[in-house]
Length: 223
Image 1 (tube, one colour):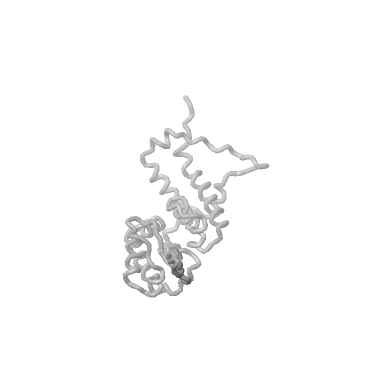
Image 2 (cartoon, rainbow, N blue to C red):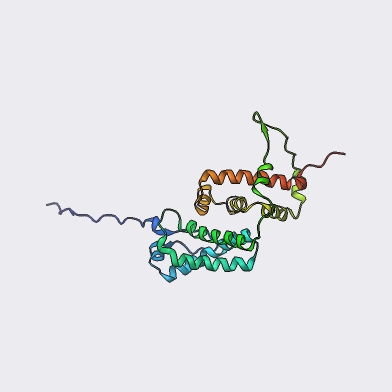
């Protein structure tokens, strides 16, 4: 007589839904954080989020406002607002994207309040874009000398100063997309604009930066 087969075998246990976890690439990340715990107001889960995201978020904020003390205050206010408003998070994007949007908005508000604005206006950025006629450059861009670019020990400072001169909207896009290397879609969600608008601002910002840096980078005329 054959042994009776189990008619109701146990179903395999499904893996946890990754949508319920907050993953991060922040320095020193201890691992994913339970989104459900955060939404429920779990203080330990939120403390872990603060520890993991503070370094990178602080870096983003300080690059926007260029003031360490003010950036520290904004960082604290960002996490305070996030904790108080966590119930408003709709899970339509990454929690970290939502968190950074709060910090970026606070940083930009601080810029406007203190009037630490850029030296360039939007119209000037527009005038600094390459000109085309029938699909061709009206003026051929100068060739940058790789040797000079390499030899400039303060090239990072030059780039930083160039970025600081950009209008707020352009500067923020460059910082998030080119320096922090967020995706176009992530930047769009952080700033509350379309992905197309991010691409346009980034293109114009890069064009303006090239004009600003050109005198320092172009190839010297041969003797």
